Length: 385
Image (tube, rainbow, N blue to C red):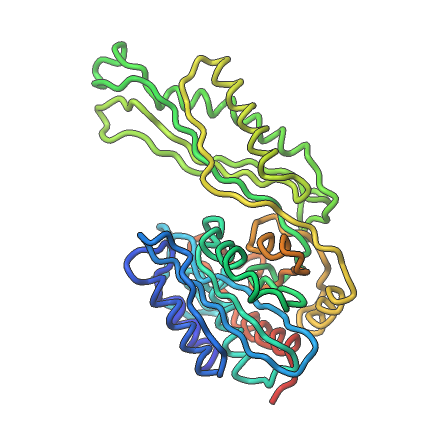
């Protein structure tokens, strides 16, 4: 099948969260395409028994002296309002393919399947196409690294294809997502003097919590930032991202919540960052007399990959296809830490152009970028047949 046709099928699966059977249908489609290419394929379930979290693992062994793992994810972020086309239907316009997940990360999956149709690999090939990367990856690649360790034992290097075209990623920031809930006293909106409005209290708390943006900003990593960054080295970031409160305009809510995303340095540990932020949060609540709860929802550490001879060679091969490539650390998170923590050299490079609107309405992948990604995979894994 042509790369575009594969991507069209992948985009049609609504995999923004594991509802109904869209996760399963997508995983089964990927598994069947790889089986057609004579891969040994297994779907492993990272779920807890109440919901299915299928992950595809596949391998094809050759006489080469190394095995490189290709890792991508098929889950996507939700497609909110603002799209000019149906986000679940691949739409071509002006040399671009629009649809949710086209660049992040279904384009990489389509490119891998297409490339494997066209080459006779000179090395061992393993692939993990995982779920749940967009929510931390614990039931995706995290599950595989914990429960299928022996399957990963012969890997020479891991390639995370959930990445930018602008540089080869040799590290990533740590990620911590959480929710803060403020409690007040509900009541009729006509009698605010009898209530304690949780929304008002949350707004006051958020004003104070914004100070953590400055605290995070002062931190600097030894890892180099990507091209176009405001600072030469990776820095800490804190963002408030979601608000939730109330049931009706004339009811004063008794609770209100705010979600946040905290990106910490690759050198920091999740436990240390959790403790630091909780202390900061507790001190503010005590000072303001606010009753509030902090809950961490997901997170994982970052990593820094040394530029070894093999890593440098990887970058040089890609430079023959994508010009101007350098090494840098990711500002966003990816599944790399799960593999790096096993001692597997881990690099990241993918089809996400800087302007591809990933995580935004009208996400797209350039047709030219998709073609180059196929070429890149062929270059890393072997000779054309």
